[in-house]
Length: 509
Image 1: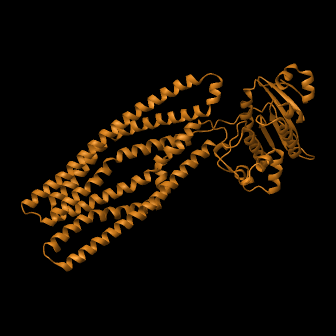
Image 2 (image 1 turned 120 degrees about the vertical axis):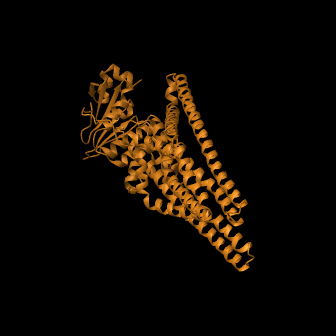
Image 3 (image 1 turned 30 degrees about the horizontal axis):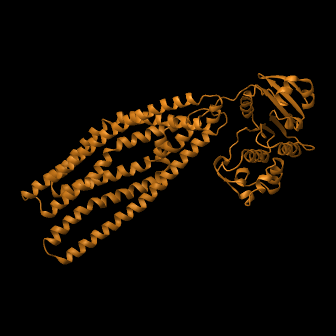
């Protein structure tokens, strides 16, 4: 997938308008020294006051046109860049949210932010290149009108300079791509380590994680310094060559003025154009570096978007719930529970609510369902004991929620996430330890609320609760015990607690 080509195509209207206006701006900029030279030769030198007024008015009009073109051209381009960056972030996020996708959180974060921005900046580089070329052509035309040799210096010298600079482009591209890859790895690893810091501390692996991050960070630093050194030498060489070319034009014009081949006004025009040419020269000189950064980021985005989700498993889940049934599942060892949730999540028509459910920035209502009917919303909140969370805040459902529900307690987050799952009313709802952060009274209320909402008379909804909570297991119609991935026992909670010693050890500890 060619991310850069697609960006140009889907923003072609704004890009065309922005490039046109940028070209008009640069053409007007190049005409300023030409007009100043005319003022000197045609008005100042001749003492013609009327012509001086008219030419100054024309100069003012020229500045008005270039300022207006720059303003409206920039507006078009900034809108295109913002839209493209947003579109890329949405695509990356949509890919990451696909079922059975196995992408690292940090990698997704790095690509959806810095790489999406770098790739979208291509829409800024194209009009800059167009404007620089227009400036070169207009400047060369102005110099040709004054002196053919001066025009030839620009027309011949500029392509030679650009061709020479392009020879360094492959090396710059490789080093920038390597830098961005390692920087992305470092950012990805940092995000993953911060997210999993508590489990790492729990198993005593924080020192090993620290050493790993230091190694990746050092590699990223070396790659960054190498790329910066290459870019520094390139920019120094391009700036020096561009400056020497502009100085050569100015010196040649000075010689022509001394020998009487050009007038004082023409000398001013040439000096002004030589100074002005430094900007388009510099822009065209750094094009390889710009394109290298955009390509490297686009390649990373394309690689992520081309990632295929893990194939859907043909293996049937070891346990399930019949329509209208509530089933508790006790998993031994407990570490297998996450794998069971993932397995069930790949089944069509099943909604899984993982143990660590996240809330997003917005309001409580937006986290649950902005369009849910008030009756359905009230029922789900009551069943999840989340009505107490809403009542605890003066704004009620409009209470703001920070990223990941940071301002809420663990129990409040769990109850809101459970209410959100209940509102969806899936045929089969899979819950993984939905009450670990709530007190015993609230847990009893949730167990009863689940029964009332999903398993009333005539209900065809199924619920699977993966837990070791005796309160939730007692509310289930039956309990299945999984040991090492195999169904080891099944029955009601009361029967298993009376007959199975291992069950008692896990559930009633």
